[in-house]
Image 1 (cartoon, rainbow, N blue to C red):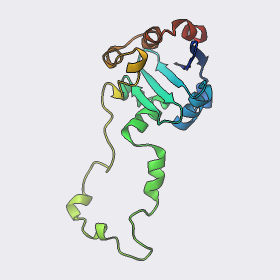
Image 2 (image 1 turned 180 degrees about the horizontal axis):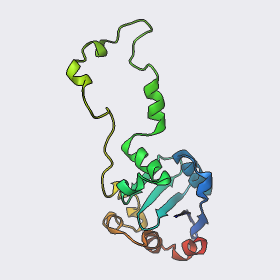
Image 3 (image 1 turned 30 degrees about the vertical axis):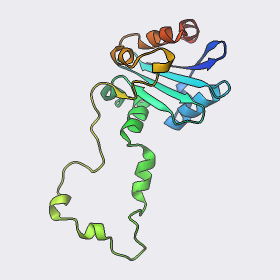
Image 4 (image 1 turned 90 degrees about the vertical axis):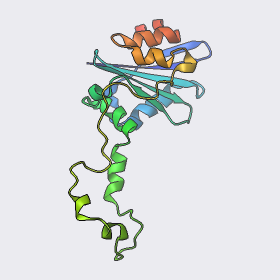
Amino acid sequence: MYFAALLARTEDGWEASDMELDDVESLSDLIDLARAAAVDDDTVVALIEQEDAWFGVVRVDGEEDPRYFVSNASAASRSSYGSMLTDELLGSDEEDDELDELDLDGTEDGEEDTIAAFTSAEDEDEEDPPGVEPVPTGPLGDPRLLDDLGVSHKQLMTLDGDALSEIADSLGATEVLEAVR
């Protein structure tokens, strides 16, 4: 079972809203929801947890690139919403797969691929698929993404159990988060 919420920073503190995960089919959908919840392009923090297995934090600041943290990448990678985050952090998202299908070797149609010409038979026998990184056990991402908001990277790295409540408490958003829980 998942719980997900958006915390949007305002002049008066934090506003929380329940995030309907049924509407999230990709990481871009999640980022779009976070940006839509922003007040005056201020910070929005998306919090996701799957029971006590893992939690994830996505921080969106206006149009800047989002920042991500996952508490247990191995556990998250085995769940639908967690795998969106771990795939992004490991650089193995679907867009890369689509690009791999295209002919991006720099040759014109009919030209020989000089890189392929130098590939030895030994290289072709490798067992590990190229570009696939193993999912690490433990935290993955940017542990400093909430440092300036009152949640130190050391604290974030050691959270477990009711992590989202502890994050909300450090942000001063406990009451608003509990209202949507």
